[in-house]
Image (cartoon, rainbow, N blue to C red; front, side, top):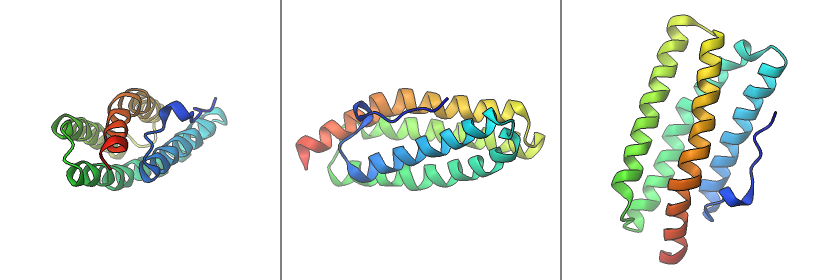
Amino acid sequence: MDIIWTEDLSTGVAEIDEQHKDLFRQLNDLLQACSQKKGKEEIGRFVGFLSDYVILHFATEEREMIAHNYPGMAEHKNEHEQFKLKIDGLKMDFFEHGASIDVVLMAARMSYDWLQQHIKRTDKALGAFLKVNT
């Protein structure tokens, strides 16, 4: 079961959208591995990807927010910080318990929820603002 990128998820900011698409691809790779009973083998790579992703992607969005004086920046950054804490918890679980099915499921669920909630709501609002103010 793939999670499909649709244009209704687009923020209209090419760099941000490409990073979102990469998250979709990586999550789909994890889901594909799970469907082949290889999720435990894939989870370490996915956790590493998420750790790197939040640094790069959040910096990209926050750079745009600062450059264009985005009024919703505080709330947006707070969501980023909350997701970073979830990633830290996921990493801790992975290092403590290894590649367990619980870690795989938590990573997939957390990422899917992020895609559905943050991108559709918070990032779309940022994109709409940037479209008008750039």
